[in-house]
Amino acid sequence: MKTLNVSVVTPDGPALEGSYEMVSCRAESGELGILPGHIPLVAPLTISAVRLKKEGQTEHLAVSGGFVEVRPDQVTILAQAAEQPSEIDVDRAKQAKQRAEQRLNMAKSEDIDHKRAELALERAINRMDISEIR
Amino acid sequence: MASLRDIKNRINSTKSTQKITKAMEMVSASKLNKAEQNAKAFVPYMDKIQEVVASIAGGNSGADHPMLQSRPVKKTGYVVITSDRGLAGPYNSNVLRALYQKIQSTHSSQDEYTVIAIGKVGRDFCKKNGLPLAKEVTGLPDQPDFAEIKEIASFAVNLFENEEIDELNLFYNHFISAISQKVTEQKVLPLTDLNTEGQSLTTYEYEPDEEEILKSLLPQYAESIVYGALLDGKASEHASRMTAMRSATDNADELIDDLTLSYNRARQAAITQEITEIVGGAAALE
Image 1: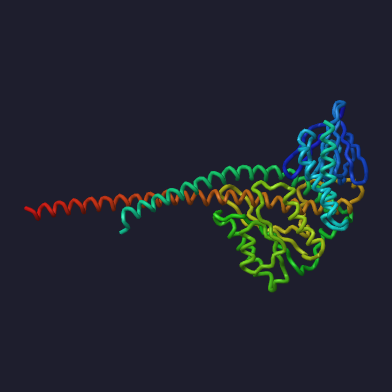
Image 2: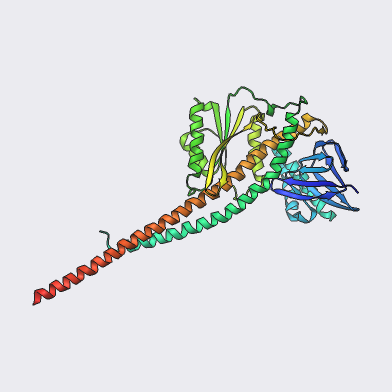
């Protein structure tokens, strides 16, 4: 079976490198499934899980925004942060979630702080969801 | 001539200073190692994002974004990266001098520029010289996370987007090797000089479209440039401190040698004098 080379790079270094049969991720315009031989594509990702399939097994990866760059045999994910379920610090995510919720209650809805807190909340929930999958 | 005890005191105090500088040298050496690794780990990300940006902006797709356009410069923003602590040789003074000269030569009034200072030394310099500060950032850890830098970077990018500044320049020490760092001035915004040569540009499909992508990609790209410079600056800081501390240790060694020599001379002189006195005293008795 044909495979895709997948590399996930973050500012803190490469997070994952390997070949997979299929990559699914959630772009801002909707769910995206990538198989080998895909047309070159660039799409922004949402804070979500990236699913990587290999030999009937699925690996998950939490990404905090970023981009996916697709070439026929190569998928590169540029994310500001990317973690595998085993790497996620659940306690930290829980604390982040609490903090974000507190801030959401305090700040006004148009504030920049409000938006930031919303994003932080989204990231925390995403991390917690993915950490449960393993 | 200084008394024996004075010289002894100086030797001891020089020795204890030397212990400190030696320890600082070793600490800096290990921090430099980590900083270099961080800077290296960042390279693939930077390369990739640059490639994508270049292929979108360089393609004749007609995609446009305010960050790609130069507009008449009414106000310039400078980001200067310095350290929080001194004792790093010429690290801070070089970059601050470059910044000051640039400001002196290009601007006639304070309304034409603003400075974002990273590091205590840079902040104090701006305050002392009356440069307008848009933001100051101090107390950054030695191994900064992207998340911590993002705030500074997006602040600078926002200034540009809100048209408060029309140009953003970065001053930092570029790490060449452990003994050589070079003050570098880099233009971050507008992104006019994207290096598209020598790269095989792929034509991409864009989902949803180029403009949407540029909208989220370009700020990220600008932020990465700032982050990259900061990692580079951290590596330079540690390298510079390491070199400075090594020469301080060497100088202390030399000083101790000199002092020991004059200590021994003084001791010898004292002994000779004593003998002469005794011999003189004995001769007087005869």
